[in-house]
Length: 232
Image 1 (cartoon, rainbow, N blue to C red):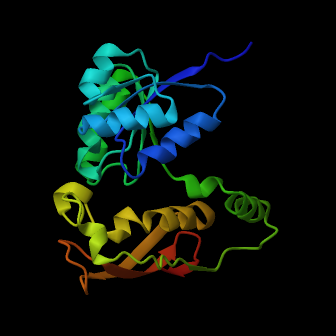
Image 2 (cartoon, helix red, strand yellow):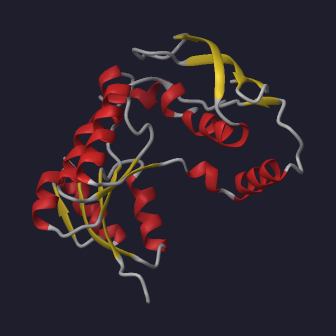
């Protein structure tokens, strides 16, 4: 039997929303039903560009008007928990951008909501699925690469001061944390995926140059459960 196409929507039509739209365009089983953004004109332009049926100004408005199976949450991190729970309450599965939930309390609340409602929440960790990462994972799991002993995880991304001009960036309320949470999370997740869970972490974080409320640089020494050591 051919699977029924998945009716999808995107909430948040800014910088990362288009990546979700292009993914759905490339997926043969996705029907692009609707999108939403607090800036109505941006939602309308997004719908026209990426072939989404209708544009809305909020997830609430979208869910009331459209039958959807899956919604991408591509909004600032500080809004993720509320939007995830709203979608789950409506019986809609969620694909939420990283960082999925900025705090453990919000993570617990969304997890409890998903369990209570029988819903599903997926996090975005696409670096696991590249050809190189999948090949490395296969080598580790087969034993061909030997036992992992040392890991080095560097995220040397440059963000100018202007990157933080958006009102939600550079703040605890908007982002939930600095580049450790918002950028390095990709590489840290891939390291854990390949090497396994860690046992101890000794870390430092500092704000050196950027106009932000949190750190703009961090480093850590890690001991993994399998005895390997790593630096981040």
